[in-house]
Image 1 (cartoon, rainbow, N blue to C red):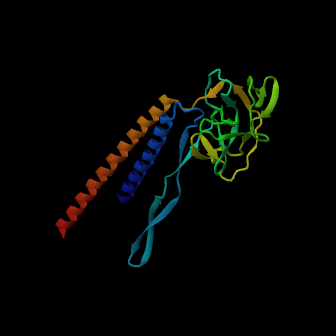
Image 2: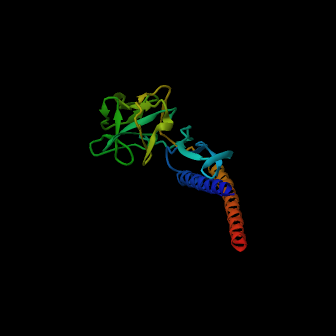
Image 3: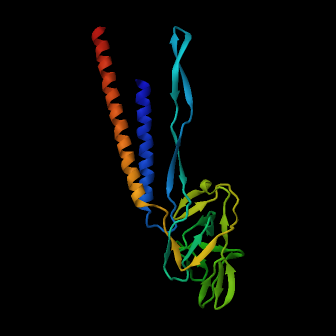
Length: 247
């Protein structure tokens, strides 16, 4: 019975984690370039159980699952595109990231809401420098165009090219807040097959209806596990009371 109590409690903890992740996704449904989080569950392992008789190990009586274990990963599937018509809005179509300079080093983003700082350097919405192939991009006055390959063109003259990279294992990237990701030891590679769309932004790849349905299903699973815990707790209490009476 204690084994069942343990399993039900672990199931409740797992559903709490899942609910937190689903709530995080729903809170960012309108965040540009946001990638939803997913909970991946598995079994950590099993422990052999046996009955002791005196000091000797007796016949095995079964196994106890140590898990489940959970890992939160990022789903980098393409989000929907929304046309804005703004010259410095860009959306990436494909598995690529813009490279930005932050105080601690380099970071990577899908948020294409770009702008210019006082020195007319290309920056993110939070003021981080957006890097080109040769470093920070300075954009002179004039009509700005950004073609499908990321070339930045002003009044018909190319002034630089966006640095767009990809990673062998995007799921290994670490969220750093503000739509940024850190490489976490991976070496970025020049992106292949990525198209830049000027005047568009990529929306979050979150489907609110699906997330809400999963939240409701998780709530029912949590309540079922909670009921199992309460039932087993009451049964244990009755057994202890009976044992006290018999003694």
